[in-house]
Length: 194
Length: 259
Picture 1 (spheres, chains in turn blue, green):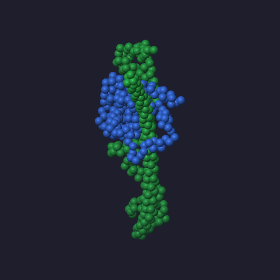
Picture 2 (tube, helix red, strand yellow; picture 1 turned 135 degrees about the vertical axis):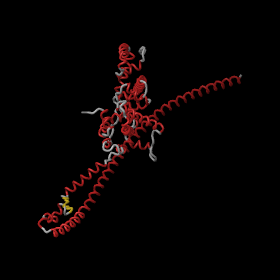
Picture 3 (tube, chains in turn orange, blue; picture 1 turned 120 degrees about the vertical axis):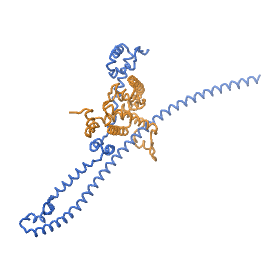
């Protein structure tokens, strides 16, 4: 029989590390997906995911079950993502290693493919990803939590600490921006596919 | 043609989102029923709702890349001691597992060597399959006198000890060295593969970002060129007008001076 999160948490607090491992197995993909969709970089998302479980493991004795385990985990992950975003804003966007000609590297990586082809090759998934990255963090988080993690408005409101109506407004604004931007990109996409 | 305009009296955006996600909460069911009735009659809301559903369908196609998780299993072995290192190092093996592995290796080695360790009143006896002939007389101690038996035992034991030492030492050293070499080589190979993968991934990502950057620069450049072109056109027009004025003035001066 499959144990619930609450049962696994209780056993983990009692020192059963297999139970915590089961929780990691159960939640690592959703947490990784949340981190990836929030910060947009695979390796950093993996780091955030790993750090989330480390923090959860350390804080587990203090977890009293006030919220669902998943909500608690999401909150840890979102805080880590927020920290990451703050750090990234301070750092330069692209840090080229010393003595490396990035133009040469780009040419060497795809010698036969033009820039146009390279850009056209990206599918809708990338387009959505890029547009999502343009949204303000609050709107993006609301969309990610609702769209990909199926949280209720109430859960999102508790998780991000804002009124329920604000969650709905953020979702509406975010989706409206996506709609407008995707509509802008449509003629270009059609041209590229012809 | 004019755009349809919505006249819903409540908070339309929130109602639209609640309907879109079918998540209004029990207390909002009356509001929702009212909004649903409104949507049936309002073309603007229907159009927007359909468009938002389309966006949701597009969002559903955004999948994160497949993650490579390798550290989770290590957390279970010894999480209390150092979970940080357990998660960071996928090759980390807990102490108890190492001890079990060591006992298994010794047991298997003893089995292969046909080792027989025996301890009784006459002392410690160690036999291997390779020294069975040397140890054979020790199998009938009851038949010989006690003093001669003891001397024989001592001599046998010393010979056996020498033989065991000479046999086990080189083979142990060779086994350890070989295992070390193969494990090091394996580790180096894996690390190289990881580094190669990482470098390739970084190169791809960098190339993609640069391509995007170049495209943006090109677009910006085109826009700037158009702007400069327009500005030059304006300047040319202005200059042309000025030249025309000057010419007219000159003509006027020439005409007036000739009178």
